[in-house]
Length: 207
Image (cartoon, rainbow, N blue to C red; front, side, top):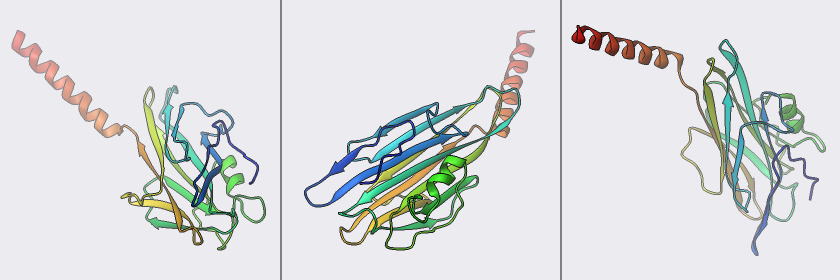
């Protein structure tokens, strides 16, 4: 098995009697911090499947741009270097992705992840060692926060965009998808105006 290059969160390994499944490498890069990223909560189960939650708080005085990347390298079946990868659907606004050999031989996904970007390509030369990356770039208003979920499952999701890593010999497929929630400035402005209007109406009634 490859050396574990986990950034801030421990890897988990699972093996069944029929097929081997292991999360060999995993990490989250929060605005350039992939060693000990803040705001990350790991909900992955003993199989290396489940969810990872990230909260990004803005303590700046102006609206600022942030990014969050997730890196997932599963080993499927009996060998780590006989997998394939595929992207399904269209990424959302501000969403980035990459499928590639991690970088132990020919690929560059791990170095891209650590460098803070994903190149939006599928560089997998099937069969090969495969890793998957998903990320978001987004703006957060002063004093607000954004939330990101990364989900992994053996069941195909209903998401508009997701990645899949597969092993033909074992017939295993691992799916990866992600969601981003950011308060919209327009919505907040409308809410503020609405509250001001309610306050003015009450003031008039009390006169």
